Image (cartoon, rainbow, N blue to C red; front, side):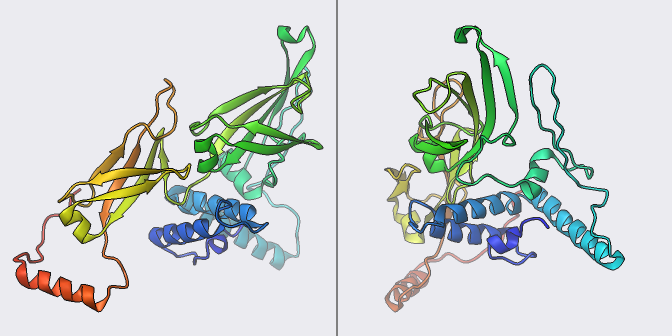
Length: 326
């Protein structure tokens, strides 16, 4: 059966998109490795992020729900027929080709699901960044004149990192066979970037080997990625909207930026922090975009309620209808 992503996010299968988002934010904050120092925190955080990557996207969630139904029906059929063997449909197979000294691994699904989606359900995700065994990614070998005619072995792999690691430019440990290697993530590197690391022998990688590592930034509890921009929501109280305020926004590297919230701003307006996003292709940097959302804080005291009563009695504003924006 596919992994139970609903259980990972502690929601029911019929949960709304908003409930899934709220549960993800709660669990991500609880298990983030920078906050939770428990030994299992990093693994739990990755599981939660993986689950939200599927359930937080309506299209992928629908495919996932369809896959759950398919697997449930298949198991019920096998139970009724007494045949536990594989059925036709969504299966995976590995093909080795020995052409031109290369080895490739091909994954296919009979049900039309894309490779990444199928691999998410059935592929064993590497733990402890163990991406460089013979079955991790596609390995190819090529000649390079700079190696003096020595065949250069190129290993390609994908590496999941947090937005904090990408933003700060952390050193990330990976396991290469029986060796552990530290790789440096360039500061504020964008989603999908590929790092090339040439082996020298002294850096833990053989001189005849190079690594091509494609980075995937995991979903974040606050920020969403929009190209090189970071998108978030800034929640402000009604009195902050009326009077204006300064908000202190926490960036992924834990630095804070003061943002001016002008008096009279409305929900849906966007505040922009220039140049504090991820790197663009031209070397410049994206922005941080904050959607303003007016909220009434919970746990209002009786004194605060009395102030609201005074405001209500002195204000001439009344609730009114308008056409919904398309």
